[in-house]
Image (cartoon, rainbow, N blue to C red; front, side, top):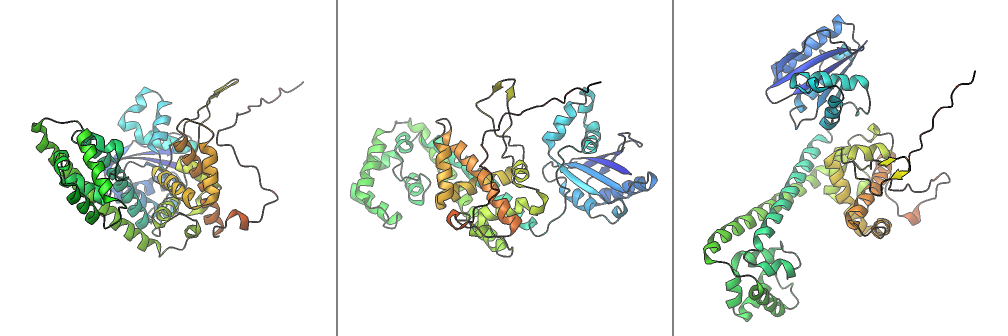
Length: 436
């Protein structure tokens, strides 16, 4: 007999709902503490219910709410108490559970109904993920790559915040970008050490010498760069003196935060590269995929046998496009789903951005997609290149083979034409009515 267990997890407690195969709820929902004793008591009670109702196939659903579900899922998946029930734990996307709850009426939106909704969702069995299992091979790497994801996005937000305030004291700097990279070492040193008034009054020779020293001789014409900085300082708006001290404080602290985050990312990248060496994988043969991108991909994918094809992997990453059509109408724009694994999607797109620079095959594909539309062309082409990278990653991991350039490959006789990035029109055929 099959039974279903829905678990609603929060930091303090867990609410459980036990359903039979027909959707009935033979026992009232109950609550346990979200700690080791509470989880142990939950497993023992579920095992007793399985014996009572002759359950030999237990399916457990739990929402992926932050990391609050992690310990409980690990304990239930490997619990010796539940071994006779053959438990399968499904970690569910909260968005899918909420959508299922909306189909059940207003009263099911109460928190006390949440475990029942989860159990009913897995009972229907539509679009369930692969059962959860602990993979200690990739778990340490996954924690590192997800932390790097957090650092990278924090750094991007901090840089945007810095540029917002930089316009007030030095409005012309961002317009010209004299250093090419505003957040380079020399650029940050100059912005931190000089105000616009200091640059206007600075001796040109002294400023050029300072630039040459801080740039370690990399500037071809430091004299011209010094003149450019002085001109930009003169062209910038002038502020009231009362704002000088607050803005200097904000700018100095923001620069310190940016440098700290950059140093942290560098340290994490070194650790990721060291951890990756212990894992055998073929993705290192792909031009442009460095240790960080590879680690992000394999740690989120895990066991490639979980995915029957590259389409399933793309769907898991959220690199799929929803159709938008009605009758003879089909929308010109089909938005990206983005309902999958955000970490995997990030590393696929960022990896594709690096591969297209180093690999002519992907560079040509990116350029072809870029030329197809004038609207948000770079983002569109980059995401489509990421979808193409999904096929390569799946093939290499599934077959355990190294990447070979197109000129070294043997054409397949059964190869199909490349799929269009835009979903094709869905044809719905009605079954002919029976005669007689």
